[in-house]
Image 1 (cartoon, protein in one colour):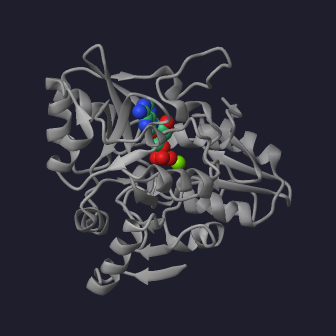
Image 2 (cartoon, rainbow, N blue to C red):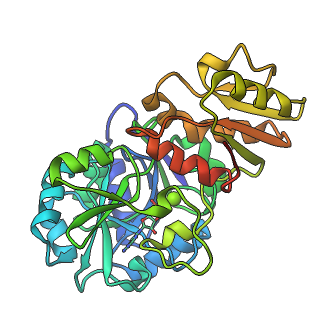
Amino acid sequence: MKLYDWKNGIDKNELNDIVNSLNNEGLIVFPTETVYGIGTDALNEHAVKKIYEAKGRPSDNPLIVHVSDMNMLLKCVKNISDIEQKLIDNFMPGPFTLILEKSEIIPYAVTANLNTVAIRMPSNEIANKIIKSFGKPIAAPSANISGKPSGTRIDDIKEELQNKVDFFIDGGNTDIGLESTVVKVIKNIPTILRPGAITPEDIERIAGCVNIDKHVMNEVLSNEIVESPGMKHKHYSPKTKCILIDIKDDSRRIQTINKYLDEDVCVIGKSKDKTKIKTDKFIDMGDNLAEISKNIFTLLRKADSLNCNLIIIESVEPEGIGLAIMNRLIRTCGYNVIR
Ligand code: AMP
Ligand code: MG
């Protein structure tokens, strides 16, 4: 395993090494504007299978295919509708993934046997340059062992992935910190399957309508069919048990949290609650939603490293990117929410 530091720019010789590796079924960890990805040649079934293995990812959970431009996108999909085209024109490149009908070049290993493929065009300069230089799409899920919090900086994931990939490319902390918004157009209505930095309001403004799949904020019951296989699986979980406190009233929230506290409990909470929560294991999640989104996965890992019996997490308003934060936190806590 080699680590390349591109925080201050892309090194041409090292880029050649990366492209050579991808041409030889290599796995690379690389930055995007959302989270780090673990990527490989999307058109090579054998390489793609290595990703599922490296992550311990269930084989029924398809991967997102990353492209550098419209030409590459058009090779991967068929039958783009007017509304899908509008979404592409407005949100790509960016933290946005669209589920489209797949073309023949995309192997079924990428889509977990579905006839649709998830397509994203990252705006991050390093991600875009790697895909463009490789000349082919890159299949990449988030860079983490399946079920764990996603990686938003190399230091958080180096240990768990070091024997499983060929290269780490360090591009510094990722900007957004949460995975892309995943959308499928169903009966002409853009439907959010996973919320992200492109919000329902953003989509409605462009498309005139938007739906949020009910499983974005609700647990999938065993007999239910889901639009996106990822909804069924365990996600974003530290090894320590977590509880989400979703109480708006300030004094009832603080009282409830304080009842749980002992030396084996840590709290990931809002800056404004810091002085009222009586613990020396308080981890400040930040003051605004953008900051919380950027830091939350690193903070979950930090809380886990304290080896407590319990992590208490404060909820955020599910507005704007807050919906995406809450979607992740509910799963982090295994739907264990106190309201
Ligand atoms: P990750 O790789 O962790 O960013 O997760 C990718 C998400 O996109 C998962 O929730 C997948 O289930 C979802 N996904 C990928 N491909 C498809 C598809 N063809 N249809 C529906 N959801 C998909
Ligand atoms: Mg993931």
